[in-house]
Amino acid sequence: MDFQIGIFVYDYEFHRDDTVSQLSLISILESGCKEAALRNLKTQVDDSFLDGEISFWIRGERLGGMSYATTSLLTTCETLIRFKDYEKDGGANIIFLDYSTDFFILLNEQDCQLKVLDYQYETDEEGFVLSVEQTEIVSERIPKGVFEAEIMKACTDFVSFCEKAQLPVNKDELADIKRYCLRAVNEMRGGM
Image 1 (cartoon, rainbow, N blue to C red):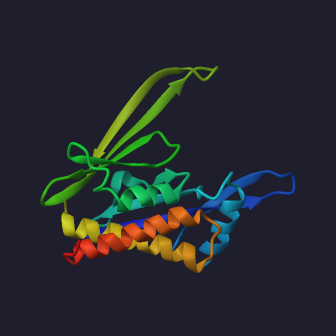
Image 2: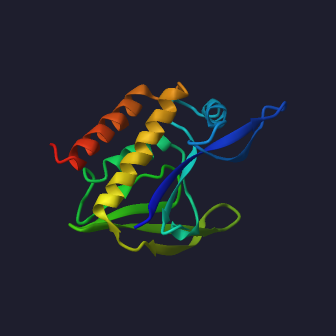
């Protein structure tokens, strides 16, 4: 089974009139991402936030045909690597901070599935919600071993990127992600 996760950082441009505009998304695996991440971090209120998106590819197709945005890649990676800790009633809620998407990992003994609930809001001129449209996307089943290995790889890549680039992100949150990545490796090897 072909399953891959990609993590991307928003790149921003600063203008002379003190405005900021989003330029593009850059993979954490690409050269130039360090500079983009540093510009991104300049737009944040504190070191827990780093805007970006995460994509999930199954058999070469992106889940829902899109990437999923978050204002905190740290928080999203932490909930991804710890999805088993958050499991309740056969599913784990993954946090994509500040967006109108509910993202779940559905678990059973053999495999996992991704489930996305996306909400589109119709509002009036004052911003009051008139109606809500919900779209549900459920992936095909992904063998548990393949799924866990790719989550561990993506989160380890994220930690490595932040450390090598010496990004001024929250060091405690980054250390937690790294610790949970190591725990995942030990579990995959049959330890713990």
